[in-house]
Length: 294
Image 1 (tube, helix red, strand yellow):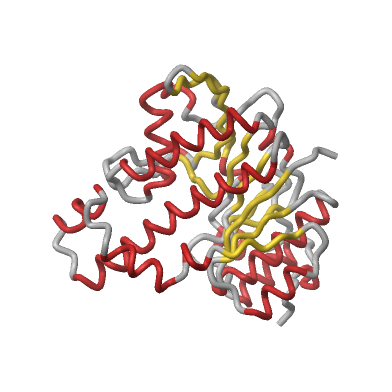
Image 2 (cartoon, one colour):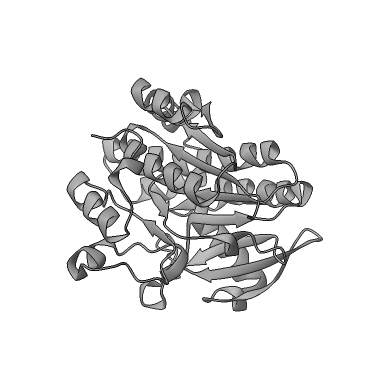
């Protein structure tokens, strides 16, 4: 079994999917550490998560909690993205909401950076709180690559400024070299802070590859990028396998989930309880894997 450290972030809205994710990771990778960054879980969810051996909760509420986000949003008008958003003449309430979401993307990068220091020289996999692996995902930490990203199907691609949808940063893999991994994450954090585009964390990743080796940006793409003299081996996996988001199509189709799909990503709150349980049944996953039950 491949030794991997896993990291995710969750608040009370994502406790259900995060619980199923943890249950599946413990089944697929028994004994592997799982770092859960607490962005505002209920106490009952915290207690449930901590019952699992190998799961460690890290309190990030002072940086990602709602009150903190509002305070930071109101004091970060120097941030390039806020300039763009203000030019769109958003109402103050909408501006605060959108900037609050973007600040969470920034905290996501910081959480992954922090987890990287905990993992040492062991591969690290990041999963959004609503991304559930249902099969082996060893390919995310292939020993031949320093960085592994997942890409959307070509029909959904958009390269436009502030509408960039190429990579999906909900599922990512990082190699075992802790020093090199840390160097990349410093670049990623800086790019996220300064990109000046919406969906800043994943847009920063796309632009980073686009400007250095655009040929990588395709399903199955592989190559190198140079970041200030440090060369990284990069692979891009097909999101249709490792980051599948079209949950409604699976619900409508019924039957077994195709064997090619390895990670289900319940974006846009596609994990409403009834639908979620139907997908669990289709994936042949027991609802008992939901740590919190009903």
